[in-house]
Image (tube, rainbow, N blue to C red; front, top):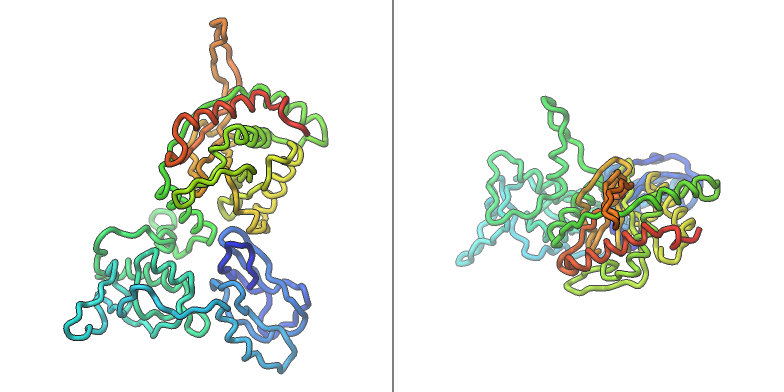
Length: 434
């Protein structure tokens, strides 16, 4: 399993294109895989016969694990089975782990005389038919800590009985829904992704849907919860005269070389210039430390069939308007097709999300931590403004919704950025080079 990006720890095997015993050619697609952000095709590194597959479709597989073996008929595959469990060392120890629980949520075995029973936090009911636990994957250990869920013995679905994150998610979901399950004591931990997925239902009157959220949707859900839980967000709404944008767009559209440049591209270009003037918003807040960036790694929200994806244009401050537009189109197309590289989905220092084409007049975009701000682009509307001579004039105004993290950005700096952005938009033609 390849490591598809610096932050990727495991991939989902969505489907096999080949089955055991099939001949394959070098470079031929043998399986479809996906990360929490995009999809990929797994290709054969050599030609031969598909001698063995070590995972079923739907399995979450640690990177660098052996997924299958290709060779000649009659060759042994046994030496590769151990590598199917991944290369990362794992002692299986769970910090604060408790004894296995029975169906009532009670400890399955009494503690030695004179010792207090081990406390399970929270005390959740679990199935009684749990098997002896195998080693836990790193992701499973992290899931257990984040959800304060220490069920003890767990039947692992990974190779060699390895307990993977999906096993703990399923067990936690079952325990919360089991008849007669003990209520949770103390504050509830955040709803896990499996719990979110279980709320996806068919139309009213129909049975509960068994569909789980995709990795992309689970990632979106987790990050949005983290965004609201770890920041102090507020939103400023403003507008700018869109007349210069519309006029420039009309001129650009008349030439085949620049016809692809959109209003959205012009706003992103203006935003980059505003960030160079007000760099406090081109920053990240990490562990109570602020990191301002001289380079603008511009991220933009992209709607895809698999959900929201946010590609990143690195060093966007160095691009001309034409190059910026082409890069936006290129990354957006890759995101929609599900072939964008994971490294093109990380490292952004500021995000723009545009709902203006849907007629949205104002909204509250959510920050993508550790970034400290996000700009929402609203629809262009006719708006009355008072001229210096006192007369009222109607203009085309583009709405701007800026959400910032009050932990770092106060109201005045946020307002200064909106003012700078308004100035850039209204002078966009003088600022840009094609």
